[in-house]
Image (cartoon, rainbow, N blue to C red; front, top):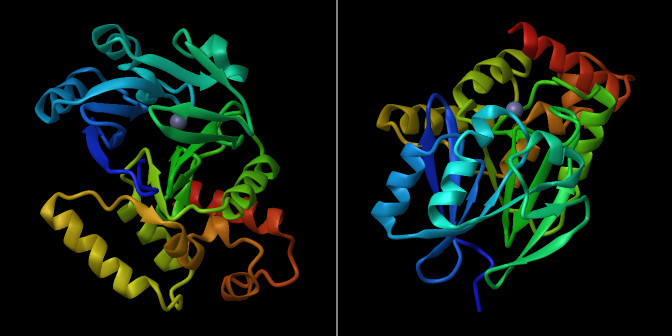
Length: 255
Ligand SMILES: [Zn+2]
């Protein structure tokens, strides 16, 4: 039986994306959001892993650019949100909010998280949550298609998911987000030690991901828009969660 903490590898894809590679059974793996064929195929060959499934979080090109070529090359099945089927490569398995699908001996939960795009989904396998462009370390995706109300509801949904420990976003934005969060909430006691670690990782050229739900609940302003300590820290006492979320999202856009 698989453990509940799958082995996951980061595959950097230009310029700041990650495709995530999760080992399932000996020699087999699942890919998330491979935005390019070359760098992903190279890692698969190096690690002698064959992808059986490719899971897509949303339709943006930097997440799907390598999907069709990889699926053809390795014979992998393509999985994505039924709602966005017309904007995704041809799906072998169309999923929807609340589905649980079996994947190579694992169970994968699917949740819709509209906001960045209206058809965005996240996937949970074991303790690992693959969040695409919905949730980043210390950040969230821009509202390209959805409203602040939709994205705030998605943030609250992510906060309540059972069993999630590690979070695997699709972009290396931690340092940029940290710079913003330090200005927004300079007295957050968790930030100095985290900053030190982020700088060390960056100096070594190593990913700052995955992050953890525990860490994000302490430091990510977009998950904390209704938390009294945070709202007080940024001088917005008395405002609703969605108002605070929308305000912080606007500040981040201007940063
Ligand atoms: Zn995107």
